[in-house]
Image 1: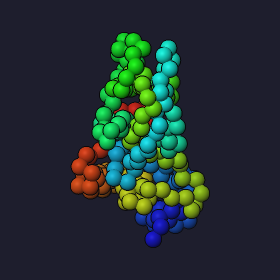
Image 2: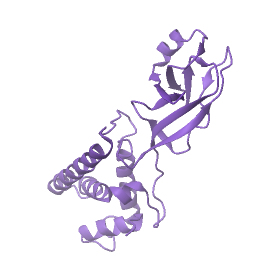
Image 3: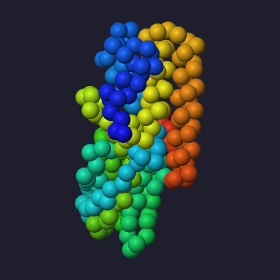
Image 4: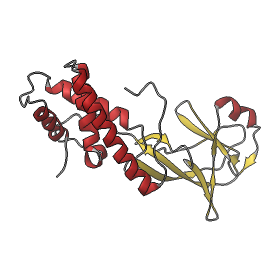
Amino acid sequence: MTITLSTLRNRIGARLQDASFQSVSVSNINDVINQSLRHYKYFRFWFNDNESDITLPQGTPGQPSVVPNIPSDFLQELPQGGLSILYANIYFPLEKRSSMVFDSENVGAIGLPYMYVYRAQQFEVYYLPNIAYTLKFRYIKDYADLVNDTDTNDFLTFADKLIYYDSLMRIFGEFKQDEKMESYYGQKAADEFETVTRRTSSLVATGTLVLNSNLLS
């Protein structure tokens, strides 16, 4: 069965014993579901990472070497092995630097890149590539808000209970001011998060990526 925005919202309405959405409106429930999705999409699970092969062009002295063609669904590169050069069937991981450190090490030399920085909404690498390289770009996928009743995504396919329980926690906390039920569903969401995380660890043996971000809500 495909879980959609409408499916999940109706489940929530049934649990609230409010199938006609009188106590909490449809628009508010949709917003709460999307709040939950915006929070959990910053964690790495087995279903929300991806990779892309990007041709990194030969560098031009005096100009930054910018990574082209970043995938449109990019949210965050993986913290380890996110950017690697594939050359002669060997992977050479690039190390992430702060903007200040990147600039201090960048003296315009040419060779096999060994580091990168993210700034001004783009990635730069250094050394300046001496040839065109294949860049293996591994990242966490972004997800747009669910808008239409038939909208769905990977979270509703593989972790619908996580979004369901977290949404109920938010509803009881924000709309019903019921601390007991908020705590109950908060624990259910925590248990489900642990279940999804455990499955992720068993499949990819890496766990999750947690970001400190003011985008989390």
